[in-house]
Length: 276
Image (cartoon, rainbow, N blue to C red; front, side):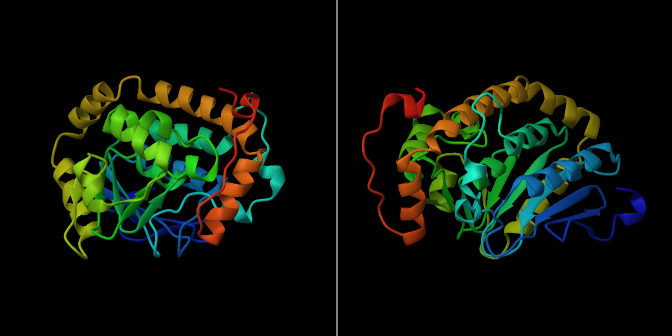
């Protein structure tokens, strides 16, 4: 992105990702309303946008926001063919490989979360340095509740940010928590006033942008030492386990129950299905 485009949105791939650079702060908006379900192409576009902003010396901080009702409701399992769910257990899922690219981004990233942030959408939000949430935001790492191992690096990023106990509770239960609880346990850094989520995320971004970009990026690199490699190892493990569990009756039941808005009815499964 060049300085000439800094005052206008750069629309990518049927408007799925919108990018705008104003002064030293860029905003990337997920634009697949109402729920911003992601797929490989969308996450790849997001990673591409971050790569361009990393190379643009005008940009110092990026805000990740979303239009529509949800920040990101994760992947839409109901719209994916069965062939997409059965993966090579020896390979990291391509969408998680794009997640590694997000984690490699060298500049500060602030997520502005205005609505539901679920599953892989929460994984996406955890790639940010800071999370600013509207009071109506809701958070859920719902993978176990639909019968599958967590993904998008959450088995690594949640314990790193929340500590092992809070992370385990969210991962085991798939519990949906509100913004106030998310703020209490450290998942959210700023609990915004009503109607001011994006504005308060921008205020934080502009405050960061006042500091020396060289100093900020070097400090960030120190604080995040080992983060990319830890994330890489986590998504490799997540991909391996999910490749087996997404073949299971539990996963089918979990997705069906989620669609029907009821409690799932799971049964014990052979150990090899879970690849413990």
